[in-house]
Image (cartoon, rainbow, N blue to C red; front, side, top):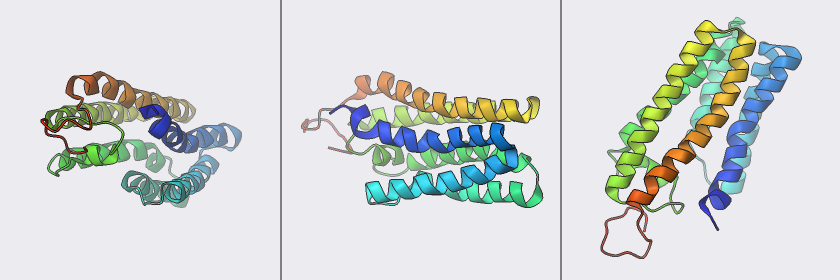
Length: 194
């Protein structure tokens, strides 16, 4: 079974489904209804992930908390700024957690992808740094878009960026991993997840 078959398909669906619901609800009923819809969808898909995986995943739980806090503030104050900065804050928190995760043994990214890929210590460090840079670039892109474009354009581009960023992480991993790949039975190389 490949990496994509084992890990990515369900996780990608759970990651992008709330964004697609947000996009559809925005064009059907406006940003406030879309915000309420994305709050509900994020909670549902996170709970589904917990039930299926039989564990509480850290990153989706943080996403739920951000969506509840900033989506709730959007609805409470009727101010779209809160929901628009959520991707930026979420991505900056993700980049920060990856950076801090480099201090752990195994690193946070190695723990998140446990059993999916096997890299050397150097490989995990380089892959993590590349993910951090990419994450910060997408956070910056969100800031530029929401400050310069209409709300409908931002909603559309935010959904597209979410999907493309997942593809970006896959591409970064696919191009980085072969250089630092370890066989799971290789006793001579240092690995975190063998």
